[in-house]
Image (cartoon, rainbow, N blue to C red; front, side, top):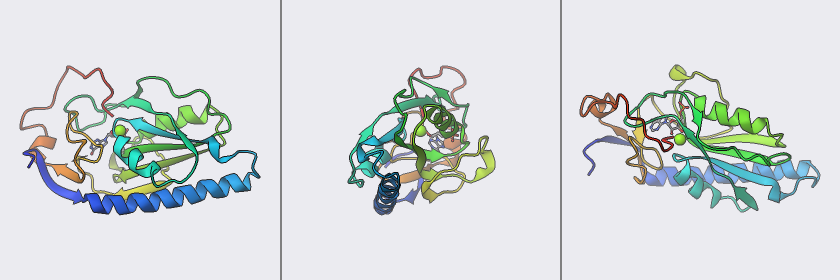
Amino acid sequence: MHADLDRTLLTGDQIASRVVEIGRTLSADLERQIARDGGEADASSIVIIPIMTGAMIFTADLIRQMPLKLSLRVVAVSSYPGQSTQSKGAKLAGEIPSDLAGKHVVIVDDILDSGQTLGLVREVVAGRGPASVRIAVLLRKPGQRRVREVHADYIGFEIPDEFVVGYGLDYDGYYRNLPQIATLKPEVAAGTSGGLSTGAERSEPGA
Ligand code: IMP
Ligand code: MG
């Protein structure tokens, strides 16, 4: 169907059942913590922070598995400009909400790779004085390229060190709408089919 795709790593059904499990565990953990805090913080103190744009689909499915009162505050981080499959470092593209004091924050991202994106967001969120911070990622790659050690509390799937697209993840802005997670053909991922972009970074966040 798509000339750039190699093989399906995770089907839409596999993703959907795992998202249900994560939603249940995460909700139970939040409820338990809020009860333990003795009602000081109520359920309305839960803030979900998806990192745009990659976490969009995962977050949309995840929060619909969370029967809790919660609010959503998106943040944007730029890390993969253009036709790049290598992280070029993480840069905030906008503000992290400033009113997180006393909140139970859940940072959501599509994938943990070098750790730069989540490391940066976690650091800024932690500086806002939240009651707790959790990290949920759909995918985690092996640590080879980990520049920053980041602990993810909820991980959907551990995947091999290959560039993947679909279910929110993009290559040059495309394929986020695929219901499955698929690998790119090696020549596309290596940039030999059309060449990696060398300059001309996109101005919109590519994460
Ligand atoms: P990190 O900062 O290197 O951990 O990268 C995290 C961000 O890079 C994620 O939010 C993704 O947007 C992007 N990313 C990392 N690996 C992939 C991949 O295999 N496919 C698509 N995007 C990726
Ligand atoms: Mg992302």
